[in-house]
Amino acid sequence: MKKRKVHQNNPVRIPLIPGRFLAAWVIIAVLLVMGPSESFSARNIAEAPASFSHLVKIANPSVVNISTVKIIKEEREGPMPFGPNDPMRDFFERYFEGQIPKKYKQTSLGTGFIIDQKGFILTNNHVVEQTDEIRVRTADGKEFSAKIVGRDPMTDLALIRIKSDTPFIPLILGDSNRLEVGDWVVAIGNPFGLGNTVTAGIVSAKYRQIGAGAYDNFIQTDTPINLGNSGGPLLNTDGEVIGINTAIFSQSGGSVGIGFAIPINMVKELLPQLKKGKVIRGWIGVTIQKVTPELKDKLNLQDEKGALVSDVDSRGPADESGIKRGDVIVSFDDKPIRESRELPYIVASTPVGKTVFVEVIRNREKMRAEVRVGEFKIEEEYQPESKAQPSFGMTLQEITPELAQQYDLAETSGLIVVNVESNSPAAEADLRSGDIILEVDHIPVKSITAFNRKIQQYKKGDTILFLINREGSTLFLTLTISG
Figure (tube, rainbow, N blue to C red):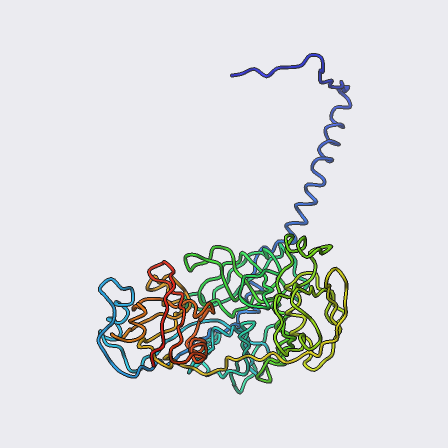
């Protein structure tokens, strides 16, 4: 063992303490060392819940399991289009005996929670959209048929309702703005269809953007959230709802400790409109992007604050007010825009028809414009569809997370090609059974409705660019419309 060197020129001097004072010195030292530590530990133990059982007893009766049914209809029967190694072959052999059915049911599961005694239930839009039947099971085992009251695809929110002669027990909606990173939170949901399941964790981050849409503002939590938890409540230690569990980050389909919830304050702002059946948003007709350090230097800006206008819709409110591409919006309706992600939400929350002042920086000079806020139009309507029209000689089906996990598909959402007719435009484009369509001309498509709406823009002779996933690899294919 290597001996430690002692530097004699700088000796450590230890003062001698008389024996009769030694005990007193030891006691004082212990108090000085242990006092603050004991106080800190006691405070931590007081703040960390010993159990969530009381909270669960209060909240559990208000959390419901949601099951949906969608009727898939096909125009004809035919031989099974899958090869011997295709992951969809087992699915069709088991349930449809090798034939494409004329009609079959597609089911999915999710979670929701009651928000008033009349039976209004909040959940995710993706849980209930494009369904033919919605069933709700409460914690006491009772089942109800539910109807959609209102839904908002932009924030993935939906309001449904069940009716009963006896009042329902609602959850209290809290204040997500008071939530702090590190706070304890509890999730109750229906993972994998097991029924109400409770998990706990902490808030990992706030204001997360995950690419889900223009209004990304998620609470991130390490609370275990799995398939089927969508639409369930995220609760604080007072039993108040502070978020709606919506998405997870996972490469396996299971929880890895990265979950995302919609802040309940955003939900409360939209709730009156959801009860009326439609969410109306403000719109000014600009496309924006973040001001990066590189863009700041190139545009000679003083800082990186604001939202850079990358495009302006022709004849939109911003265009009519004189806002141009390259302007940096730094204030909207007297509200400062520090980051680009703040602008879409502020504009959307502004009443339609209101005239507001917008401050922009153009050529290093601050300018002010008056903009009359218009209404944001959502093209997609609630119209369940099962087959793309016009047909390119292929049959499509929407992928559910459960289907993706069961058959080890490369994607958990999107459209899978289940049949391709020989000598059809799809066959000539080399589209094959099992291909997963991700984009149509650079536009992501997640549903049959979105696919149909997109391809209706084309006419005979046009060429469409598809981005597909084939056995885990992405590639582009072109399809020419022949008639």
